Amino acid sequence: MSPIPKPLPPGTRLRHEVAAGDAIPLIGIYDTFSAGIAGRHFQGLFVSGFSFAASHYGLPDIGFIAWPDMLAFVQRLRVVLPHHHIVVDIDDGYCDAEVACHVVRQLARIGASAVVLEDQLRPRQCGHLDGKQVMELEAYLDKLRKVLACRGDMLVVARTDATDESEALRRAEAFAGAGADAILVEAVKSLSVLAEVKRRVGLPLVFNQIAGGKSPPATLTELRAAGVSLVNYSTPCLFAAQAAIDASMRDLLAADGRLPAVAPGQANVASCNRLLHQNLAGLPLPGI
Image 1 (tube, helix red, strand yellow):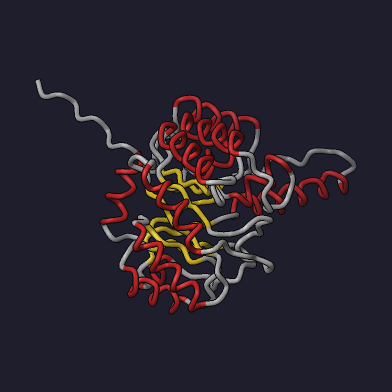
Image 2 (cartoon, rainbow, N blue to C red):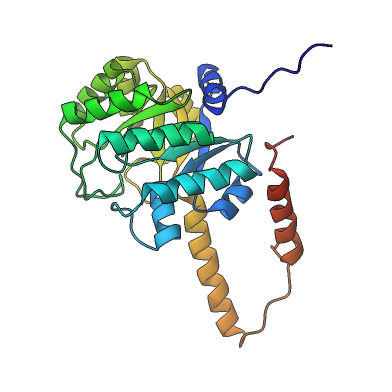
């Protein structure tokens, strides 16, 4: 009887899919419940720092995230989503290189597929807002090389928040030279920039999309043509929840506190409970 082959580690699976040449969407989630919903439709999930700071602390994404909270969150995700790609935004590694390496080693043990390490100085900003400052290049490269040395099978996406295009390109080339697995130039204002980054570094590219951000909205087909391998949708779940909850509260006030009748397709206690029981069993990949 032939032995049952062992499943590939998460990072290795993601590497194989990236090598296949498709543009893989990664849906930004803000908690385990939103991950369960998004995971019914997409096999890639992005642990967005913006969404995490908002949902766990109710605060802006300017450096409040504590790394133990992030590790605990990713561990909960991996339990209910054992088969999905989970890409984790770790900001600057939460301080110095030693902390960054500890976090990366723990995420590798938990089963994260990839991490995104940025070159922003603290106090940091959302990548699509003004006021960003970046680290000295050599200081970031030192941290990047140490993180790469302890990543296990995970991918390490090196992200630059440089706002000057020539400086962003210079940093992307340096990141590639240091051995990064993929490159993210944040808040690019034109897809032509992505094509130029691809030409210079030859590595998989990551593109970050956020509603109201500085980058132009683009389809997966357009991004694939520009050489993008991973597409982060940072906040669709968070923003959808914000709008839906606000509308629901307004409706409840307007109806003098009477709950509306449940319309076809609308969430209710039965549909919510079904989702939670799917999570209990470990949500399968879409289509399985």
